[in-house]
Structure formats: structure tokens, C-alpha cells
Image 1: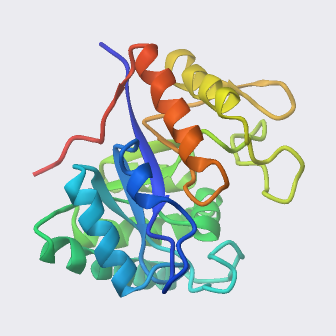
Image 2 (image 1 turned 90 degrees about the vertical axis):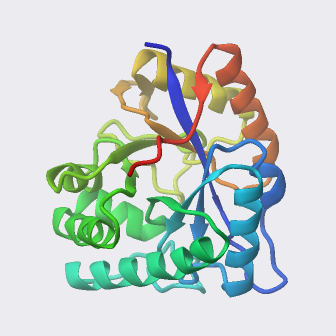
Length: 256
């Protein structure tokens, strides 16, 4: 079977006049986009505009729910219960869905953001709360989660379509977790290096961890963050490398 991978970007992360990424150009490269829903970034006007841009370019749209943390961009851990995780996920997915439906589109997936994503990757009860919210909203939505994490495991237990996500621009620890952002070497800025790592993920089923060990890794979808300097150039480099290697870049198949 030919190799195939989804390339997703986290977009719509502006607020008011502030726009940290060139969303329109990134949407020319990505096959899926995870859009902020107002809790870490994004406002109604930004959500509506980014939905329209994604639909115009034929890019699959997903919700990117977060902890309620605008000041910290959703990257600070918070102590929440599984029921609170359920409620804040359902609330944000519903908000984005309203804009997608009004524009004549359809949601494809849900991918938690930042600290919520990382907490759900290691906390089975929190992961189940998020997965239940997605299933109860629409059991046909794909759940994106860190490859091999508690979040993908929770979705699989609930019989949901799951996409194991890998990161082009983040380093991994030997246990499969992402290297914390404050640690040296956590973020990969060189586009060629990031592309080579993704080729290993897709073609060889793994990647070299920060300590030099080989980490087996499933990569159904690969994220390249849109809010980093040089994000567009890295995205273009990555897509070109994938296509040169004969790897099809495509969003997950829409479900009935």
C-alpha cells in the first residue's frame, strides 16, 4: 500500500487585530487545520474568517479546544476534573461547528491544544473525558492525539476513529513524550532536519529521541506549528520532501 500521511497545522490562533501566523499561505500546504476555539486564542471573527479560508482551499477543518487560558496561550497546566474536560471540550467543539456549518462545511476532527493535549496524553481519566465529549458530539469525528498516548488509547476504547499524531518540529523523549518546551533542543527550527525526521516516522516507523535512542512511532498525521517564526518555509519544505519521497499528503477520509 502506498504511504500516506495527513499534514496538519494549528491555525486561527489570532485575537482581534493580532495574527501570529500566515494562515492563508499555510492552508496552501496543509491537508488539515485545527482551529482555535476561543479559550487559548481565536475569537468569533477569527474563527469565521479561518473557516472560510480553509473551505476555499479544500482543507479539512478540526476543532482545537484548550484549557481556559488566554494569557498563557493554553500552555500552562491546570488541575481539572474529567467532567470539566468533557464540558470545555464539548463547548468549544460546538462553537467552531456553528461557524463551519453556517459556511456549508463539516468538521473533520478534534485535537486538544497545548497543556490540555499534554495532560490528556498522560492522564487516562482526563483523556476519557475529552474522548467522550467528541464521541457524544459526533462519533464520526476523528480524535487526534499524541501517538501512543492515553488520549489515543481512550478514543480506541470508545470505538472512535483515531489519528496518532507526530510532530515535525518537536523533539521526543525516549518514552514517547514531547520534550518540554523550556528544555534545550525541544523545538526543531531547521526545516530540512524536521523533514528528515518526518520521513523516518512515515517510512521507518520511528524517530531518534533526544537521547539518541530509536523511538518506534506511529504517524497518521503530522503537525507543524503555525505560530513559530519560519513556520511557512518549514511547512513547504516538509510537504516537498514528503511528495518527493512518494508519500501522499491527504486529510483523513470523511466518515458518514
